[in-house]
Image (cartoon, rainbow, N blue to C red):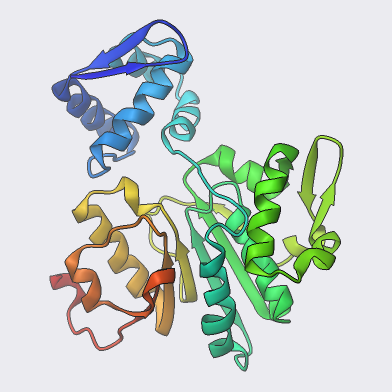
Length: 291
């Protein structure tokens, strides 16, 4: 049984059987398949949703979804935890700048896919790195997420000033000399800061279901950081195969520090910088479908 305490004194609970029945019904009726999502993460997300909207059990959630289909997107936003930062793990961004991008400096064009872009901080971090390397104008950035609300926030690129100090520290750890460049990238106001329009060019935001839709490709680099932590082993491998097929030969996959990959991952990707979680596509795999 699942028991969650919310922001109020009331509690919500549901059994494993109720959870399985709910997941099956949602998939059959609405085509949203959470079957292979990591169970603890899914439970936490449903608990947050039920507490926030005052549902006492999963049947009430299901009844509301049947009554008003428009709430489904809102509920998906609640289930998907969107945690991201500008220049999160600064050493990883240093490795992208120093080890990955030089490979593509002489290439006429570059395509990068950010899968699970959340509210956009990672995409704008990449845009800054590209601009520093004088590679922004030849690069297309495709940023996708399942959450419509996250994509709205990513496009607007307006962030609360409470985040500024943490983001600034990350940025300066990535590049200690970058303080003088900040006015080129950020506009600070009383309550928030925004990303400059110059960084937004050549970025396309799209709603995309990483699990069920065809991958974005062909790409030279794919970012998917701390998304697969919500997947079980089978779903992880399914997504990893998609990334492999979407990458051009020699392309790079960059995953999160907390993403634990299945054993078969090493048959598809070789480490370039394991500590920064940067991998290169192995192009000699004969039968990916057999993995």
